[in-house]
Amino acid sequence: MIVTPEELKNLVPSEKAMEAYRFALANAGIEMDEEITAEFIIHRNARTEGFRELDDVGKCMEKTAASIKEVLKHTYNVGTDEDLPDGVKWSKQSYTYAFDEGQARVIAQSLIDSGLTTKEQIFDAVTVTAMQKAAGITTDKMLELFHDGIVIKPNERTLTIK
Image 1 (tube, rainbow, N blue to C red):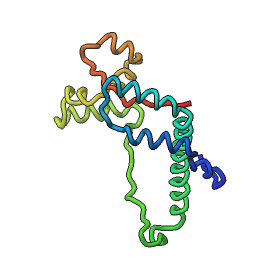
Image 2: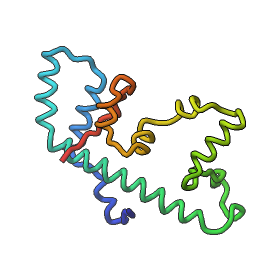
Image 3: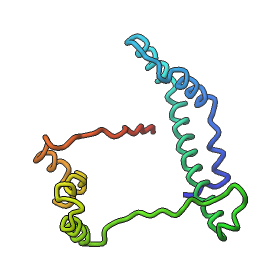
Image 4: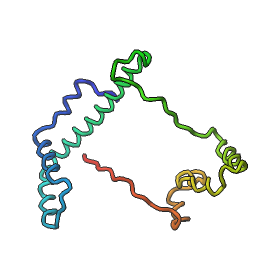
């Protein structure tokens, strides 16, 4: 998504949003007992409108940053590396590798037959997601069947403000 120069005006937060931000910064990382927590919640909730706007400004900044990155990539992709100005360069091209359809088992068996790996080593490298996909079952079914053998690691929670 490309952000137009006219949309950049949304990056300027109001005083309410700035006050909410100052409050959040002043209280970030402070350990709170029950009394301080209760007081914090009252002050935080009194700034809800400012925090909502601050969230909107942050989302706009993220979209703007992504848009800037995209147009810069296009801008500097014109021409060759020798045409780039001083201080601008592309990183070395990198690649992602995937097995061609049906080749994973052929390659795995070849590695096992050659003695470069064992079947157990290959199985240990398989992810839960890959295994459930291969079995055609859901995560819930996988956990139901093998709950003792699967470690559940929490992902970072996502905050949504509307």
